[in-house]
Length: 195
Image 1 (tube, rainbow, N blue to C red):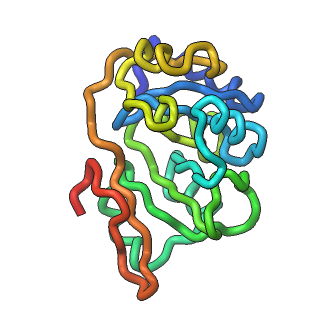
Image 2: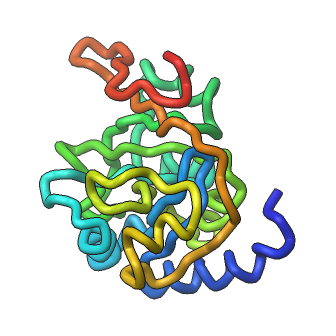
């Protein structure tokens, strides 16, 4: 459930996303940078704000498994993990379906996606009707931020909108799992969820 006082802020943030802007928002792990994952220009804005190199793609958050499956396939070897841990801090590397996503979020024909359990992250995806870029709200190589003050210190006025949900409880980043060449799950980053 989204806290009542955040509803108007979420509406504003969704409008910013629809216009191709970059939004600072809370997740279940830390503050993140959001942008419309379908927009090349918006994804490149996130890259510029964060100072991230061109060879790295961005992970995404979707509102539901159905939304994930509009843009990506679900390999059999990852179905059980998705069922067990979504919504939550589990990112799955999935094969891209179609050409609905910006090239900056796709790497070697795959995309890293999760369904967030944070009500604000969920509401932003729902409002936009599409997945959002969800990378940590800090400079590349900088420390993760659990407050808007920390994000402002690193990024200043570069983001278009700050959605302040107060201080977050520090949590490890999401666990990232891909499929290996034999069709088995392979943990790329051990994070909040032990696999």
